[in-house]
Length: 406
Image: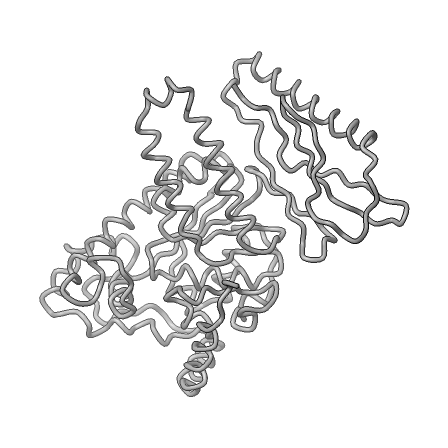
C-alpha cells in the first residue's frame, strides 16, 4: 500500500506587508499540516483556507490520476518524487524531480572526471559539486537487493518500490549537498559501472563517460597513491594487475554506455569524452559537450580556474586527490607523465594485457603516444603553470586548507 503523500509541495502566502513565506504542505492519509521551510522576516499567522483549498485540489487531482493509472493496470508506476530548494536569499525556488535533466559524470578514477565537472561547474546554469561517494554505493546496493527477488517481493518490496526509494535518495543527495542551480550534475566516477540502471531512474538524464589512456590512469593512481588495490604503491601495488583492472572495469562501463544508447528512444543519452581531447582542444570539445547536454555556450567553461571556491563557482573537496591539479588552468603538464614508468616487458605485452586501449583508440605499442596538438590557449596555460610552479604549489596548500566542516 502506498502512503499517498505530496513531498515538498510549496504553498506561498503573500502577507499584507508583501512578504512571502514558503511552507511545506505534507498530506497523507493520517495528517494535514503546514510546516515552514524557511522564515523570511516576520510573518503573521498563515491563512490556511485558500492555500488548503488550492493544495487539496491539486492533491485530489493527483489521486484521481493515480487511480486512473491503477485502473488501467499501471499499479507499479510511481507518482514521482519532487524536492524544492530555495536559493540563498530565498528569491527563487528550484524544483527537481525524477524527470529533471540531470547530468552525470562517470568513468574510471583518474580519468579526468574532476576536470570535467569543474568545467561544468563554471557554467552559470550548472552545479555539480564534489564527489558524494554515496551515489555509486546506492546503485550497487540496489543491485544486491534486487537479486533477492522473491523474498523481497513476498514482503511487498517490489522493484518499483526499490527504484522509487533509490531515485528519491539519490535526488536528495544531489540536490542538497550544494547550492541549487537550473541544471544539477553529479560526478561520482564509479557510478558509471551501473549507469544504465542510474539513467533508468532518471529518464531525462544524460551521462558523460570519461575515457583516458589506461597507462596514464595506472601511473596516476600509483603516483597519487590512491587507495584502490592493486593500483597502489608498495607491496600491494601491481602495474600489470592494475592495467587489467582498468581494462575490465572500463569494458563494463562501455557496455553500460552502449546499453543506454541502444535502449534510448530520444537519441544518445551517453557519450564518451576523451580526456586527452578535452585537455588539448577544450574549445571544440566543450562546445560538443554543451550541445549534447543542451546547454547554451558560455566562455566561463574555458576558465574554470577563475571560479575555484567562489560562490556559485567550483567548490572543491580538499581531500580529493585531484584538487591540486584542477585549481590550475587546462594544461598538458600531466598528459605524458606516464611515459617511461612501465618496464619493457609489460610494454611489449600491452595489447594483450589491456586490449581496451585499442578499443578506445589508443595505440598500445606506441610509447610515447601521439594524442594530438594543443590549441594556443593550452600552450600558453602550460607555459604559465610550469613557470609559476611555486605559486601553484602554494595555491594548492590554500585549497587543501579550506574545510567545510564547522
